[in-house]
Length: 115
Length: 113
Image (cartoon, helix red, strand yellow):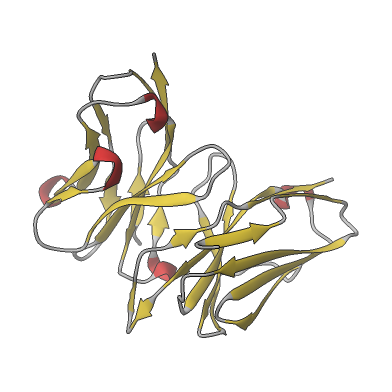
């Protein structure tokens, strides 16, 4: 299996549920990212991990909790979400060389609906 | 602060016609510029990128883009569109790091047969 794989592809949850999104990259990259894609809005960077260490948190509410156990896996734990959190959540990976980020490779996304 | 403007939200072209998607950016230094494509239900795929050098950049699927510093533009072109090109196209500008990458709001391309 190659590329960036995200599961589940679709998720419906209530505001009191706890769920997780999973991302796995098979490209040998050292950086992984979570993006949020909402209709008619630019792609929003949420979190960045370099070599398993979180290097960016763009003021994301604490109801989103990322986890990166190794350079190949990234999770986004969700709890007590709001309806406005409904969106497509995209995972990406890249090879970071010094301060330069190579091309971003995206997964197909997890479509989240919060009821 | 850097920004990207894609003035066309939706464009419709006939199959076989030429295509130009506009992208204007605001950035204080020489930018890194990208075009990504997103097909329905898919993630984003890189079409092409500009870091330096030749201002006319060739990408995958027959696409090209031209960096024009004087106009702060990085327009995407294709001489003959195929029905499979129907998708959403995103321009992005950055400083070389993903945390500094700003995406536009996208242009949805519809191709009529």
